[in-house]
Length: 420
Ligand code: ADP
Ligand code: ASP
Ligand code: MG
Image (cartoon, rainbow, N blue to C red; front, side, top):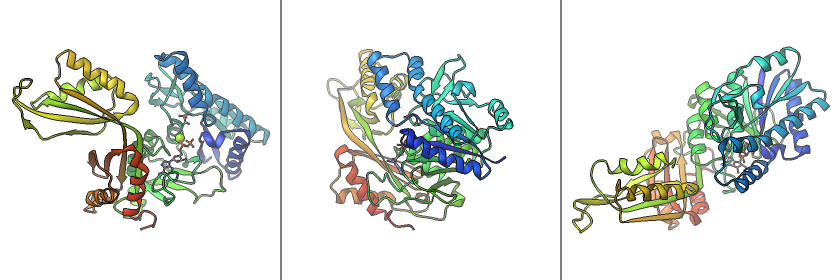
C-alpha cells in the first residue's frame, strides 16, 4: 500500500473544528488509496504555555521534567485526531513517541533521532488500520525518559517517519500555502515558490525562516524525502504548495531565491585583546563549554599598542549569538578573564541587533551579489555591523529597528516579487 506522511502544525490543530478540517484532508488521502501516518503538533500556543509553567515552577529546571511537561501538548492532539478520524469511519489510532518507540538521544530539549522501528505500526496497518496518528516533537531516551526535539520539532518527526516508512511524500500542512521568497508576514510582496532546493531551504531555515525546522530539511536531504509545504486551510491537490527538492529539479536561476531574518540576535565585542596565536581559541573555548552558539565572528585588523596593559599588538573581537545566551556568554568571558585565561579591556554587549540573510544557489554562478546587497542597504541608510558569507548566502547584522525595512529593500533589489 502506498504511504503518505501528513503533518499538521499548531494553527492547523488549534481547536476541534480545525482538527476536523485536518482529519477531512487525511480521509481524502485514505480514499485515494493511501495508508497515512499523521504527525500532529500541539494546539497553537500550548507549547509556549507549558514552557512558561515549567519556567515559573523551576527557573533552572531539570531538563527531563521539562520534556515530560512540554511533550504533553502533542499527546492531546494525537488522541483527538484519532478520535475524529474514527468518528468519520476511518480506522485510526494514536501513538505517543514511547509507544512506537521513537528512539532518540538523551539530549533533553534538543534530542536527535536514533531509530524508529516500524514493527508496531506496520502490524496495525496489516490488521486494517488506515491511519497512525503520531505525536510530533517527542521521543524516548535510552534511559526510558521522554525527550523533545527542540522547538518546531514536529516537522522533523514527520520527515523522519517519511524516511523510515519510505513514504511517497511528506506533506507539511501549515498556516501559509507554501515557502515564500521571504516571510509573507514581513513583506507583502513575498512570492510563493513552486520549488526550492534542499540546500536553499536548509540555509533559510537555519537563518531564521521557521516554516520548517532546520533538522527536518537536513533529514529530507539526506534520505531524499519528497518534502512539500502547503496550506491546511485551502483546498489542495498534488500540485499545491512548495516542493523542497534536489537542485536538478529547479528551473529558476536567480542569484537570490529567498531572504531570511532572525530578530533574536546579540552582538558582543571584546575591546583590546592581545593579537597573538591562541587568543581566539582562549575566547571561544570557554564560550563553547558554556553552550553558547556563536554565529558570526569578526576580528579587527591589529594595531600596535605598547601601552601599560599590553606588551604587544592588540585588536578587537566581535561575535554574535542568540539573545537568550548573552548572560551565559558574559559569565563565561568574565570568568575566563578572572582566571587570567584571556585579557580584554572592555566587554560591549549590543542586544538590539537582527540578522538578515540573502540565500540562493544562483550565487555560485552570479557575481556581484554582495555589492548589490550592500548598495540596497546603503540606499536605506542602514549600517552594517557584521558580515558573513558562505557559498550560497550572505548575512549581515544590523540594528533591529531596520530589520523589516532591510528585508523589503533586499526583496526589491533582487527582484524577488517576479519569477525568473
Ligand atoms: P506550524 O505551526 O504549522 O509549524 P510555523 O509557525 O512553525 O507553523 O511556521 C509557519 C510560519 O513560518 C508562517 O506563518 C510564516 O510566518 C513563517 N515563515 C517564515 N519564513 C517563511 C517563508 N520564507 N515562507 C513561508 N513562511 C515563512
Ligand atoms: N509544539 C512544538 C513547538 O511548538 C513542536 C512543533 O509544533 O513543531 O515547538
Ligand atoms: Mg513549525
